[in-house]
Image (cartoon, rainbow, N blue to C red; front, top):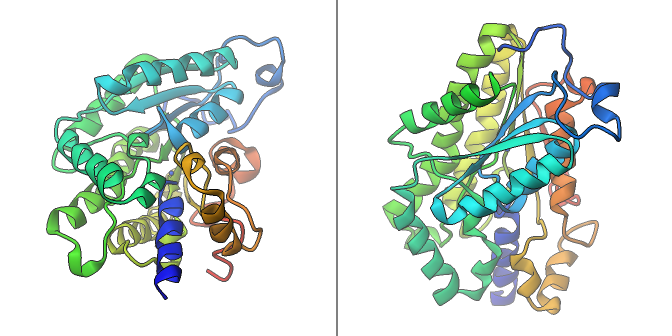
Length: 327
């Protein structure tokens, strides 16, 4: 039983590590001009895509996927310590033919949280290496004005925001009996309230032109639950419910809202783990392997840009190797 719990807890970290002014006649998707191999800069009609928490990890993979599609990407990062990484991501996007710039959100309140997570990860539980804390950005839920400012900067640079990808998130995992109020609240604030405030700010832009797309990065944990992750499951389950509600509310304005639910995804953190552990985790997955960030990014790109996704709204799409079959 102890071994099964450890495997379940290990799997939880893998799952939780990994969401106007444009004329209406412009369709979401690539034009022949955008797909030309000689294109070195984003096309004039490229979409502006804001990806929260996109300097590293899954968020970076999503941002780069948008860059491959020759889009204009807003790369959001945490603090000065992440500035170089975020700017390097922007340069990668530009080399792919897209355009990008980095925005730093208010991280004053986050640094204490990050310090705690780093201690938890590196001093207490080696299994927590599967929860990369540097892949998200902070918009204090008590300071939604920081999110408004982020969107204002994006509009000042690119003129609008056409697509919002809510990817930012954190984990503070432990059993319910040991979970302190701050551990519960911080995950709800970032993973759920942060999505709400970003969505609210985006809607004010998109609704004026009656077009836009939102992709929320949720998690299979929000669908099937997981021991030690009551806070994370509640937040991601809330994101899924918010996806359904907002899809109905925003449809009249031509805005689609969908969610992607990653399963157990490879990361830099998983590379340091024993192969025996990873093999046991893989046995829990019908496809018998971990997913790749690029596979999640590919689904996100489809929902965010492809013309075929224009008639899809209010749905969740699992990229989980089959572990959530039946949800």
